[in-house]
Amino acid sequence: MSAKLLKGTEIREALLAEIKQEVEAIKAAHGVVPGLVTILVGSNPASLSYVSLKIKTAHSLGFHEIQDSQPADISEAALLALLEKYKRDDTIHGILVQLPLPPHINEKKVLDAIDPDKDVDGFHPVNVGRLLIGGKEVKFPPCTPAGIQEMIRRSGVETSGAEVVVVGRSNIVGKPIANMLMQKGPGANATVTVVHTGTKNLAAHCQRADILIVAAGVPGLVKPEWIKPGACVIDVGVNRVGEKTDEKTGRQVAILRGDVDFDAAAKIAGFITPVPGGVGPMTITMLMRNTLNSLKFRLGI
Ligand code: NAD
View: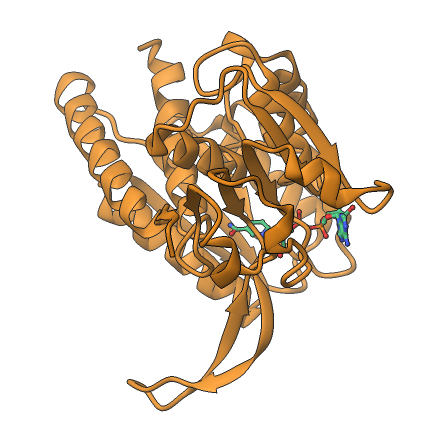
């Protein structure tokens, strides 16, 4: 392997330490801490585990954190009223609704009812618009793309003038990261191509990329011969390809693979993210940063 590994697990620790320090400084100067509420409807075990991790991370940073668990049969009106309550609560700067919601609730209606100035996931149409406009308009960049941009920035790879190819055009990864990297400004200013299921010659586009970002959800889609020697390869894909027995716990755990043929690609790329332990650990970290920034916007600092 010749590529340098970009480990999200390491970058996460550095970022969390920076956030914690800033929280302490703001608390000392202004007497307030960032507040995050996660609303969980029902008891889906996967959702419960995501919410617990977010709350645990927020707690470790000194945030005011609330896990608001609601019964699976909560009415849509009651859920909307809850969002209104947190919108008015000055101790709360970030509101999350854990998906999926039960079928009797209109998910879009609920997500659209989150106060855009507390929408730390960055998925509200107002925040999508702000991201597209760019510059000082941006409040909450969506967390996975923000994590990708941070990883590229910390790798020292130059984005300005770089050819970036993004594989995938989803609203949560492909579209926002493409938009963020084409903006004029630090950590961006790249020439971006987005490829997808309608693209004719995927390999030829990927071969041009100084920075290749892959978010397709297809294990091993990107072949080593598609990678330009020395390129920075960010593999966002997380695909369950089987199960194995964990040596420590004896439990069955998922075998995860990315969208890039890692072992072969690592011989050609200059930088590469592993799966797991690459982009994955960055997402919750950037959620914490968005919540801290929400408080800073409120304080005007
Ligand atoms: P999605 O299914 O919404 O979108 C996938 C995109 O890839 C689509 O736009 C599609 O056009 C494109 N695509 C699919 N197959 C293709 C092919 N053969 N050739 C060209 N383009 C193709 O997925 P998503 O939500 O963007 O997630 C993508 C992957 O990233 C998944 O594996 C997901 O688990 C992972 N993911 C990881 C994180 C994280 O680590 N924090 C966050 C979000 C998504």
